[in-house]
Amino acid sequence: MMRTLMTALALGMAHAAHAYTPVITPNGSTLKWEMKDGVKVFRLTVEPCDHELAPGSTIKAWCYNGQTPGPTIEAVEGDRVRILVENKLREATAVHWHGLLLPSGMDGVAGLSQPAIPPGDTFAYEFTLKQHGTQMYHSHADEMVQIGLGTMGFFIIHPKERKRAIDRDYALFLNEWDVAPGAARPNPSEMTDFNLFTFNSRSFPGTAPLGAKPGERVRVRIGNVSQDCHPIHIHGHTFKVVATDGGDIPESAQWPETTVVVCPGQTRDFEFTAIAGDWALHCHKRHHPMNPMGHDVPNMLGVDQKGVEDKIKKLVPGYMAMGETGMGEHSQHAKHMEGPENTLPMMGGDGPFGSLEMGGMFTVMKVHSDLPAFASAEDYMKRVKLPGDLGWFKNPPGTVASSINAKKKAPEPATTEKGVYACPMHPEVRSDKPGRCPKCGMDLVPERDHH
Ligand SMILES: [Cu+2]
Image (cartoon, rainbow, N blue to C red; front, side, top):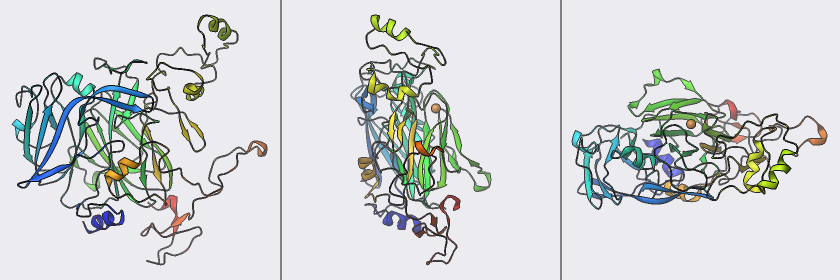
């Protein structure tokens, strides 16, 4: 508790009164509430909205408060909450509080636990939070269509007192969509064949990075109400899954992982100590860090297409024979070949060393010692929106893979990260050579090893 408060102060969080580190929902927001007679009152409006998946592609989704995922509800165990849900759809709805322990009549299943909320009406849900953890909310009326179009969000309940403080707390909602190239309306009838995969309803290169400083304790919460299980993988770290939507996992039952499978209807929280670098964080199914146009393409690997291109160009102007040496060239797709309007290229974003041949469920965990200070979670969500935000890691000299052929050797970046050794207890103490921490006398360890 004390350390959390101190962390909140150290981070310059505006609400130092929080007994917890506020959750950041990258590319999303946190739902504001008003205190009325000891009850935290939240307001959700379900309505159609235009939602940008990434620059260049906007879909017609169904949203809470104009966004998908809806704003993250954040509260504390023991709170009494009232959530007013206004229905601005043209069909009935209901909101289910997924994983919450509450009275049956507040569970939000239209027809089972309550009458559906008709268009134009507002229903009040009210209950006391009897647990803590990463829970979700989503539509529970015409589920296939309403959830398929984006009606989902996080419901995060902090414990009254956290046993182990966390410095950074992030939440990523998984979803997948079927949007025909050139179209804007996701097809909610699709069962298996999706072509857009998202973190917080954003596809790379539209995803905001997650930031931390070396040595900080980071929690990442993953929620999923899509059609598939997603193995979420982070590079350069090992982590422990510390909680599920059912509650905390006792420390004796946690084991190290680098990938956690999150299936529909599940949440998983994992924690790790941040190690300096720019680290990929993505779904490990090969088609999920990928955008449309990677779909149903004929396999041209190793096929000699000489002559074919010229012949087809006479019939289809602008035709390009692709795929002979691989599909990496698709990352340049948007630059040299027009796709249908409102369609993301199959892959491609700019990284510090060139084109990043990724799309979909892909983002970057940026662990930088010079990470800027943020006034609040809201401040982070406003300022950090795209992969290039927060800059790129300055690699220490001699730590970047490069050609062994002197002639082709790429020059190393001119600037280098200062300090490769850090104190295990005081991550702010950093040095470019081994030594002792002036604060506690412990040996400084290479940053990679100080878990
Ligand atoms: Cu996946």
